[in-house]
Length: 559
Image (cartoon, rainbow, N blue to C red; front, side, top):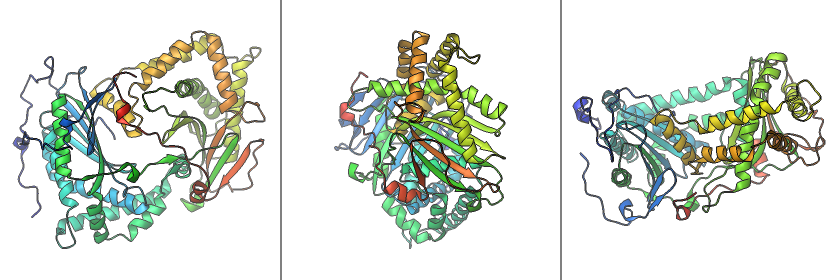
């Protein structure tokens, strides 16, 4: 009962002995059947002729991917015309309003994907032998299915997985098999242990999660998810699943050795198997970022006694918000956003090594020192992370601020020995342009880059090229680089008492080790200081940023 049945490698029609594979224009080489995950993280030929059939919808072409859209599914497609290998990557996003609206929805979605993977374990073993692979993971508002492997039989694995999902979500309290109940209980205990073990994260990771909890809505803590899961029963799981599968938003990315007709066929078959009601835009669960005020410093502090009382390390993450990510909205590029995104990339390239050298090597604050681009939902900026076993977060914050101030002096004062010369500025520009224009090394890397835009729902697939072109065309002379970065520091990385044009929005997430106490905030600045004691109350009392919307009617052949 409810078993997958006897399977063998022939079930997938192994193609390992083939040497030639059909493509649109030429032949392609064979590859080994062992395929690394590119994304970590007997079908009837007839299609239903109804209004949901993707064949009947307009094909919308973008610069990098084509969109075939119906009311039931959005299907992004790109033919592999570079690597010419017989592989296909299919990523299906299944979103519902139930999955992220509460901690209960998050933990039930988590258990759903774990139970489903257990039920498919025997089937997936033979799929692996045939060079077909998959994984399932939580997304921000549902589940994400990632399939990759040989193109001609990968749809078999896709359809089987979705059929098993549909079956699992159709059980009632009277019809659920014993083995499913046993798997649920086992996965529940495993997940509870995982949530408990999150208490023992490294301090710098507590800082990162603290930033997310305070700055994104909705977002739930491990403690909230642990509490929701601890009282959940198999009946709760069954009820959630039956609601989960009814109304969904489906979005699929198909990239690799497949034609447009094959992509349409896969999309239509997904819709037929899931047999869902489309989720209306008003029901979509949208994660939004907090809208930070200019000339304001937000401080969120945590202590080890609430997590791991024996933790001796302290940590800090300072985030400096700059702009909203450029999305593909109304077929218009916002030049100011593009400029600021490019400037963020350039500034991070310039300060990363020197921040490590100053804070880690010279001042020896701790082993963890990191500088990078920070993205929260659709907001972008830069962040600096430091973890120390002997200094408290307040001191770490002062040293980060001191580093930024000194770097500004190095950039502008040509009378000092540490003055940053023109040649160095040009080398920074060239390094970031080369990094942005670096070609993917295989089909997997290309799929990751495309998928990042789809996950963010910004759909600007040639973002890196646009940013690189801006840097190349804007910063021809070293003096232009110097003046632009100087102004960036004055507006986004300095306080009002330092430079009058400052509009800095800073968020400082701090974690105190067992030997340090949380005291009064002692920050020497004229900027407004906001202390966050309760992230939930904080988010209820502030404005949220507008979500980046996307309307397929606006897309055409030109960016």
